[in-house]
Amino acid sequence: MTDTSINNSNEIDNTEKIDSKDSEKQPKWYVVHTYTGYENRVKDKIQMMIDNEQNPDIIDVTVPEEEYVEVKNESKKLKTRKLFPGYVMVKMNITNRSWYIIRNTQGVTGFVGPDSKPVPLTKREVMKFGIKEDKPVVNIDIKVGDNVNIIQGPFEDSVAEVKEVDLEKQTIKAFIEMFGRDTIIDLGFEDIEKI
Image 1 (spheres, rainbow, N blue to C red):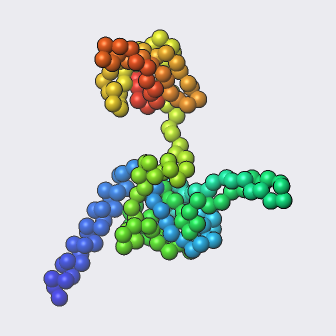
Image 2 (image 1 turned 90 degrees about the horizontal axis):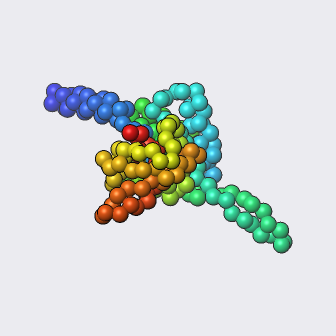
């Protein structure tokens, strides 16, 4: 009996440690399975929790949809439909508390993953499913002709000369010397710093 209670207390301690480590990570998108037809109700309930700040580890929620044109009696109507009926995407840090809150939301049947353990979506899957990520706005004072240092990506620690600045998209076109020739590349504001 004593050995079992010791093992149980160690398991509790381990889950608490996992909790604190997970809360330090960047939030990721997870897929939650719902009853078909309950997607928007589940989304609204989770959104209310986010708006009321009931749990800071739950960041965002969405039901991926697509627009399509329906032709009926020679008239066209623009409509929307769910890409994945029965599923809702939630951006969150997985902790025991956030997992419990989402798992016990009315209409939710569980997380998508082995043994209902949440598995985060990859960046490619997030883009493929049409989930719009809010990019942080980067303010940088650069103009055409300036030199910038590339701080991340395949050309890291290289210097590039700015040829075009797109403030709306927060990108630049710049020349970089590659194989003895000037080559134009696209860079995001988050990839560069002014010299």
